Image (tube, rainbow, N blue to C red; front, side):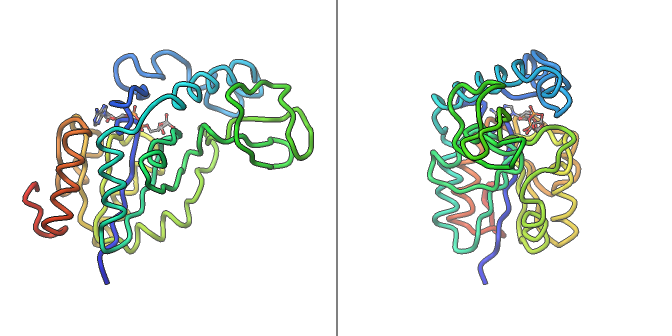
Length: 238
Ligand code: APR
């Protein structure tokens, strides 16, 4: 049975596609208060502000293009003999634009959710507090993204994958937000080999067996080439 690889991706993967990260200098959380734009309380307090924040990110993401790292991950998912499960914290659609499939545990900017009836539909580029739900017609549209204090999506499926993967990789994530930051420990406890690919060491670096330091568009294609030519155990680029 070919080995299963689980790959957690974060904002650093899309940085070179021009989409800002959250905690790097000048990142999104330096420009906005999380409690104002990424919590249910903030949405209840000022839905227009939250919609404006996500409308801007949705429009920016819609014009972004996948970079060499997204493309390499899609190539790995296509050519690896076992399963490659991409678990993304990112809400952009760049994995899909590169031809990959991903479990979006924090939701997607391109999705709208009705806070009244739970209906989901493709988000218009501009959503407002009075945008009606196409199903129940309530003016209760919200971005289909997971805010702080809400349960991430696909957690049961993700946990099952972490328990039976041979390799776990984290790419472009600072490891500061749970439950994603704890995935490496879950995978290691199940016997997986763990590797971190990032521009720099992170708060969870010590939990990984291996590290590849550098920009994602450099280290990810080389890591994928190593896997596809040498196999997970004989990485020349270890
Ligand atoms: N190549 C590789 N890594 C990069 C690059 C790059 N070009 N640029 C930045 N990074 C790394 C940074 O070193 C950092 O470790 O990407 C990481 C970005 O960290 P964050 O901004 O915290 O993003 P992320 O880890 O995805 O945040 C997790 O927090 O706010 C929530 O929901 C939000 O999904 C997000 C979650």
